[in-house]
Length: 478
Image (cartoon, rainbow, N blue to C red; front, side, top):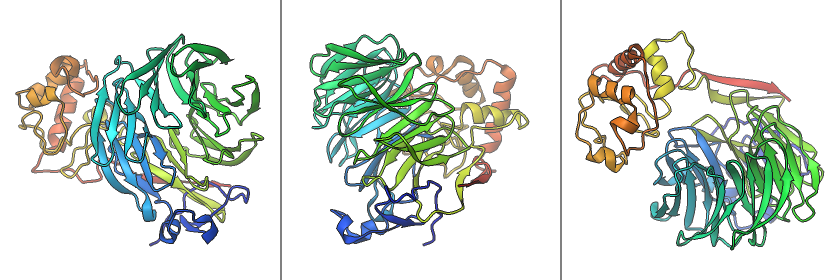
């Protein structure tokens, strides 16, 4: 099988413990550990494809054989990475909005958080919800698991960080004191301290069990977006204006400042060994830095959008990243290539010009993140709209509808679709998972409905790739 090389430049001997040629690892028997030779020689797939919306986060298991991803499509996916193939072990439906982050709490369980403000505890073997804690309704962007797996911590936009028992879902402590959204949280190596960062520009520490405030470690001035921890306990945080710092939480001193992004820092990850730090920004850049010196070791640029999610492989010799696309990409390169492509579809389905048909423009902007139009279209946040006219609400086979839509009793028609966008889902279909989308203009609603009539007609189906846009590759010289 021929694979396309991706464009991260892990050519330095200091970090290249495995050699990769177009995604195939050449590994010595001494470095295999618990991995089989078959797994090591096809270590990671080029892509993890399966979501129906932009991917928000990814986490890789300690042994590198499994991964969890979350998406705007309201779901999480449990993956097997064994043998170099990305295989879906389970699709996790339990949230009612975009799923922002997820962690393994054990080999058989996980916990995730969402824009709907809920915490969901998962049984990974059965791919079912063990418990759902509704929360306050304010979005939760980040979750961390304690080193012993007994607790999870949440960063909520109601200005509070919270710690829950990872098995029962019982509240352990609530950390109140931030003056803005809490954006990220991390446990200390011993699990006794929780660190939190906020839109208010501060980094604070708390007693995990009591929730008592300990100290303010940083007052950055700009909002702090992301936080991670090195194995030895040092903290790494990234801010709205693009700076990334390494901090000693004991002394409160900044140890190093990493290379600055030209946009907000949106993602951070550290290697299992603690030797590498990677930051991703709204500028589409990823910097891989030495954790001791702060020096940039490798650099990557994707001109097609921000970097929302990053994760190292356990050895630190491969990386997974995600942004506006519906998939996760894997980067491994050695030996270096003078030119290597970034292989994406651009513009994406929701990125359209003003010159297109007005109905197509409204669909792209209002509907395409959540819905496809074709018969074989993948589930996104909602089901395909193929054949929607004349279909009873809540009846498309296989889609996990909310109780509100299952209990509704009307037929999708030009009149009901017009009411949906005139009034908004919160009023027309209250209690559903549909995000708030309202179109005030009668002319724009009519154009959208006419477009849906044409594109969802079972007697005249659109081409399968109609919604995808042209594929482009960007070649960047190293």
